[in-house]
Image 1 (cartoon, rainbow, N blue to C red):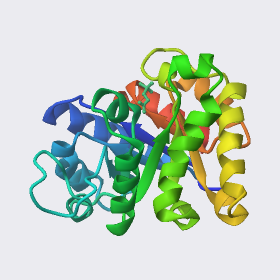
Image 2: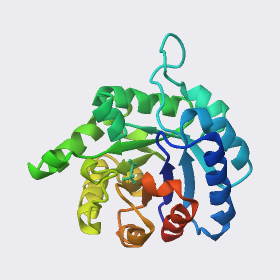
Image 3: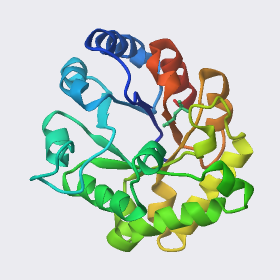
Image 4: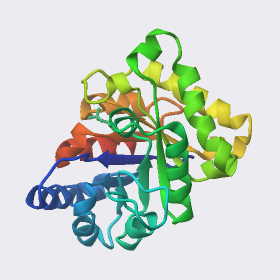
Length: 250
Ligand code: PGA
């Protein structure tokens, strides 16, 4: 059985007070979540606070990004060693907001992925197509290109115990979820593509779905054979809603 993981991506939301309340709220309901792993990725400045509150619990913490370099003159960036020092287990890389709003290329994302691994963090590699790419029939081509950029630097070994999140960009924050069948099709494509290189690594890979996951649609999505949990944006900002999604994966 593959590891399932539900991760909350809090993006640039919250205050010290709201982050404390949200973290405590999630901790309170965590014992009702089954076997699925649960993580939250707060804005970087709140990571020490969340890590302190969750220390010793089953709630893992992740960064929303990680620098491709380990130290030096890289204003605004955060090194993997820093995330690690403050208790992070995961680092999201290649989120579509980083790719599309901040111009991160496939190559940069691949280097960030490598930096996460180098620093003992589990990368959550986001891949996914824009609406116009889906409409042009290019979904698989785009996802393959994004995976190939990482494969080119890490080889298949990079995917051992890593996490991939399939997030169709048109479904992020739009309320438009991919149907379970649409998502499953791409998840199977990702697993099959990696399987051609190493089926053991591909079979064990946790592939999350992300894009307008809510408590009301999580169970259906997570029931698909290649969907191993979710990367949750908006719905991860409310403890009850997020916990209901976690229970759907558990
Ligand atoms: P959403 O975001 O759940 O708000 O659509 C998902 C994500 O960006 O990871």
